[in-house]
Length: 79
Image (cartoon, rainbow, N blue to C red; front, side, top):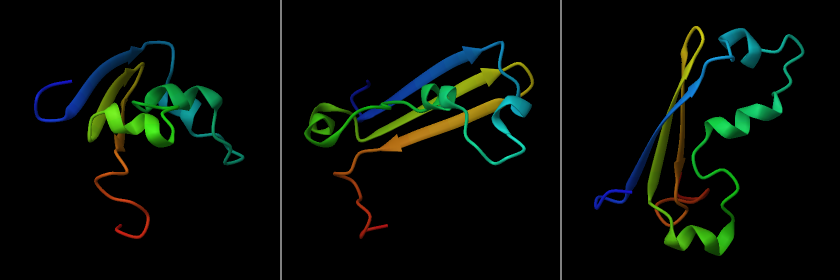
């Protein structure tokens, strides 16, 4: 984390292609969770986390950009 309150993650998933993400039946593969920063942070745990987290994942044939914003910045009614 830097002093501006944001986290940037650069990840590489060499064995994953864009077609692995786009399932014909519309289902979402379970590994997609790894493409989002701060996945699994719940409730009060977020107080000590950055306000914004961005992860850029390089894949075999593309790029995936995942992000997370802290609920302290905006919640469902504010969006």
